Image 1 (tube, one colour):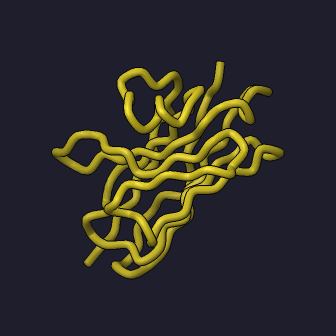
Image 2: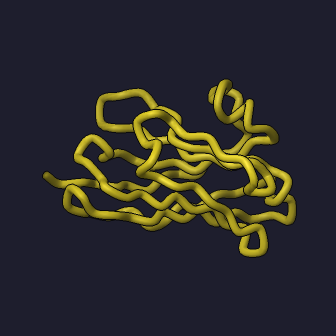
Length: 125
């Protein structure tokens, strides 16, 4: 069982930055691929970024490539999402997710094993 708790959301002006963190419980954190998803008001949840168990492989949605960076610290059971050059369209609730594989995170979100409750990031224009 893995429990995920996100933090780091808040209000920022366009062009600014936020760093989200997701703390995971359990001793098996390092065996899971981790990902970030987001859901904007009135829209469906969408994939943002994923990282494999070792941190050596990452994958991003085109909309955030070059602006967002996902990373993890297995010693701290934490995954991060550094978000730079934020735009109003990045406003959303950001969710952390854990799954056994990158394929599961990026192609089968309905089957993802574990989700956090989300943290709200608001970007003002």
